[in-house]
Length: 332
Image (cartoon, rainbow, N blue to C red):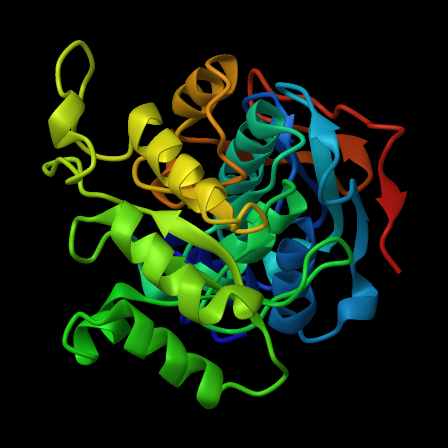
């Protein structure tokens, strides 16, 4: 409400209106610059509710998170005295832009992988303050959350990803780290276990399966793009051998199946994009799930906010106009 998190010029504009005794009744229209899948509406509304002195003095109409939107489509309008919420409009624009980018990217990844799940991995390439909101935006786009805390859906059991750092704390012994996780984690979740710590994914996957099969949902292949897994070295030639590639997935799948561990799934991660998912799917690679991170925040997505009515009459800067959207509903 003080404007501490708002853009300084927006706070200054509000303060000028208040100091001048001017309290115009306006409609501020929020519209998208691109087509995509809408995210951040609930969050933007929350900013408005928390950032004004009297929420009942605003009239808000909006679409819903998860709605398909077209370029230049109105997604939200706010009617009220401008001096009450002028400092909040830039914040709402930023929320909509960021979350819609994540939601749109998530849906593209999910559609490429369908019907296989896409799981959001713990974030490591972005500011921690953005993580929880981005995770929700990605979930709106259709991803599952896979993190250090147990998450579950109606179609999947609670899953926890064992972090590489925990394996390191057990001297690189993946099996020991898994045993510790199971011994000290309530509610009996299923584990997703990385098997690339020693760069020998086949051997590690088998070791984990032999000791903890009933509690392992799947193994994670996350070999660095600068390394060649030991199982690939004998067959190098004719394909890119580094990182997670189709030959590595097949090697792990065949090894698990040969010992009767066909129920253990394979999650691949590491620079997973829509293009890579499509390539794996077109080649029939036995991937069961995809783990994504940076692909969720790639690119850009923009919104604009404009005053389009003033004291009950149409009024907007050149190039802008009121664009009513019958799909929007009143926010109560």
